[in-house]
Image (cartoon, rainbow, N blue to C red; front, side, top):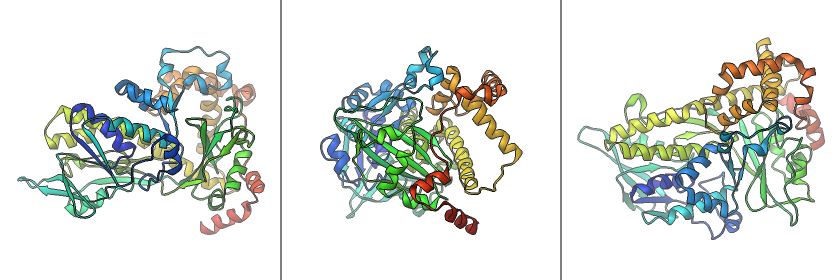
Length: 492
């Protein structure tokens, strides 16, 4: 029994269906309407608030699908999902001398609206004779008991109305709002978790290209950026659609309140050089309201703390196990990697306790380095956002040195060196460890050589400014930057 038929639940069915098990997914939301456009326009997904936010399948997930489920990849592409290749996003200085390498083909990203991805994957898994999705099934509790040794064992789930469903294995793919931890606590099971706020909020709006129009050429102006007070990105999608997402730090209360207004959202688009050509009313038209997503947290749960399973025959996949900042686009990849790792564990041993321990170890080995790196980056971004509100703030000499190394060394080196860019992108796509490329002596030597040349010699390698500074943006939007700064200082 799988609790939830979102991306995590569907990835679980994808992974386990070929093993021959009977798989039942219990989903509280009703089934989607027929067709990708009707799904985007009308499907109500209370259990997936991110349904109409920007999505992409990183290269590691795209590779997993291509290798293990090639027919699904074909179905996704037939529905309009498309691949963006490594060569498609090269900086201008590298384009001039770029020579493709065999590993570049591994770094293709699959882009589409989340609603299209979910609709097609759901239709694909439902075609398996041993998979059933029961929509409108509201799960209210966990059935468990203690075996002869006193160990808790999952036996099934209870549904609204008092119905019980029994199963050999219970898999929680209920997402970030899953009540499973409460049910575990009621049963006396002990798990551990760590986590913290991501310190940002997300805002997304979808657009459709007008008839006869095409996407702007990817040129000098960047379609992604980090202005300190605002992060942004354009996400190409399926069937002549794309989305634009803004990530606003929690401390930016005035901007957070304003950006929900469509006129303010579009005004921000118009002041970002790399975004304005996409959202130009002559080229595209909005096809959604501005969707907000808050309560963004990073969280890592251990279901077998210190090697002691909290409950046998119960496994968690997706956000109910590990939550990530959507800024990194890793949520779907984490869920798929966990689901296929669970498949390997279940086929590798039949002992319930060993299964729980092995799955916990597998998830930690595969994913914890990416989680820890994300948390460290989020902490740094939150500090910079707060400091950016104070014109009198001055970083320590160590902080200034690190910033210069990153901005004038690393960022410039990857804009001119294809091998360094490959290393950075392989880490981004979870194909290599998060910082391994940066710690290699050869990489450091190249970066230091570029940094040592100085800003003047490297002037032609700097990316154009991705947007206005905070006072200029606030003035253009009619927001009072000074009053907001006073509020923050008073709160501090």
